[in-house]
Amino acid sequence: MTEARAKILIVEDDADIRRFVRLTLESEGYEAFEAENAKRALIEAGTRRPDAIVLDLGLPDGDGVDLIRDIRGWSNLPIVVLSARSRESDKIDALDAGADDYLVKPFGSGELLARIRTQFRRYAQHTVLGESTVSFGDIKVDLIRRTVERAGELIHLTPIEYKLLTHLIRQPDRVITHLQLLRAVWGPGHEEDMHYVRVHMANLRKKIEANPSTPVHVTTESGVGYRFHLGT
Image (cartoon, rainbow, N blue to C red; front, top):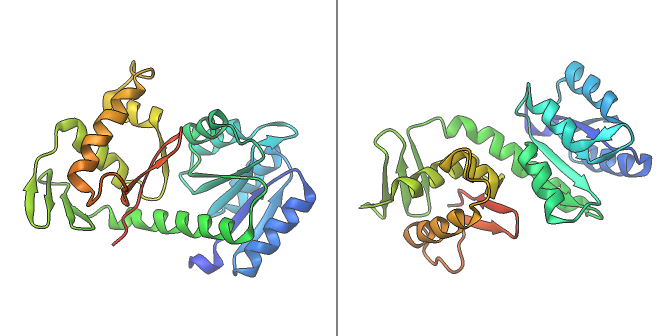
């Protein structure tokens, strides 16, 4: 499958928005097909095996968050949410359920296509990140030796900082929520300890970012979490 011929399922109950999204995707060479509700979406996803899903949360026969959880039970394909729900709590719920990105309506076709391209790049990079080393900027992470270098010099990360960094670099260009990081790094029982993430992330940035006050590799999604960029 080449990205240009990727199959994308559009799950949206508004026929006009469905048509707009389909035409936008087809203009870029994607193969798009539609579902107007959650039940139909599960059938289409199971039979057509799309390469990505563009999903509205407000569906007539259920909540899109539940649909995300259902799909995550058997697939890790990219899911980009399109929703009129703009509250941080709605974004967090969708991302914690397994969505890869979240775009608030109204949206432009250019931004939608850019988000989808980013998710296909991230998905393809899973193969790259299966290698033993990952490099970004002047940082090199050796996942086998568990070492981190900056401009060829070893730098010391605490065990928590190293866990945060490796969890992020394995999922580039994906929004990782505070709750997901807490569960991955500190384990269950720390769901209320959001300050842990902020403190350790600030220390991590001082060690891996050229300018920690304006980070380019680990950026903040305000009120939601963080996003890692491989960059150059």
